[in-house]
Image (spheres, rainbow, N blue to C red):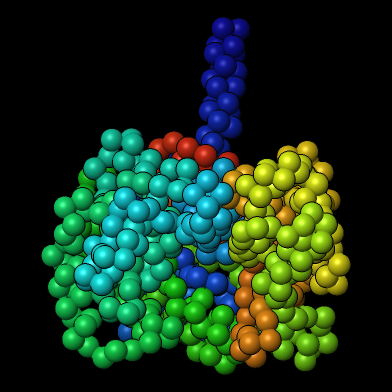
Length: 521
């Protein structure tokens, strides 16, 4: 009898262990994490042009670009930014913080600072002067991540006590700075007028760029003066990245290093020519070629090759079709002149409350955010909510406005329904977002009669602006195409899990557990 009990106990224990073994094991930390962001990379670029991409593996044994990642990654074809204004700064701030703009404090590229009574750029910081040629350093164009209130994955690597190197590079300063975070070893961006890679005293208090950057600038300035809104911009970015790999010995340390890159040229071409242009196809195919070259470089330079690298590919936002293209395809589309709307609001408020002795009722506008003259409202003993309501009434008369809401309505939670309410709550940041915000109808973008025909833009939460691909590849990640919902805020907590660190301070995404391959056996 005792023997039977022992046998049954053993069998029960055996199957209990098997059942528990289905939990995910602690992953082996990679040597290097590489974030590859393509500015304005709408999700359908990976499917529209896939027949022209390089093969996943070339005949010479080298690997391709997009096709290699698609076949070796956990690929979410419809990743999401669930925010009301999909633009560059919020997108780059989101990817490594895992935080929506309402927390991270980066709802727009620019906003009006009512305290300082001036327009403010998202990475503006007068205390962190540029390190560059004299004509830039004297212009007081300081830059830093201080306006961003969240930490990043790179910051948390540092906070964990690891000796990790964190490097962030992009043609656009806001892309490099917001991905790099507060504790990056370097954020590097390009200044096209002086044709040099620059940074700020935030990263190098002594005002001196590393020697490798100075040498790189000498090489760039000795070469041809080419337009960065072309494949040349891709070459510049990867050239800097490869120099950084060597200078910081990325992927060769005891602890995980992080390299974040953003390819800004894609956005420049997209704005100028639109997503349906031949130029956009050419740019995407060039990105495929450059990506292939860079992935093969990583294979050679990182010990163990890509088996010791976690790769992330995504975009910071999508883009709408140009109004001309949309109209040709029988869609209701057009441009909305924000400056004209601001003038209409001021004219209405002049009539309602009297003309101001100094300034206008609308002091600034950015991405359909309209900022009211609050000192004037206070001096006239008016209620802000009442003045905002009057401004809203003007915007609602525009036939191309889908929704309009005010800061007072945000405070009272009287917001447009459904998707709009959710996206507003994810985005609106009091003091930086506008007093009155217009959400245009689909396929209506900012612009005026002087806009270049065929040009395009983005600044909404509609599918064409918010949908980007999300791809993650690495030794602990199970490749495949996933139809589950994934948001860009999910990237940071997933990387944090793989790195064995806590997620960034304001992260609220989820770990994409369905892609994790490591299980105990």
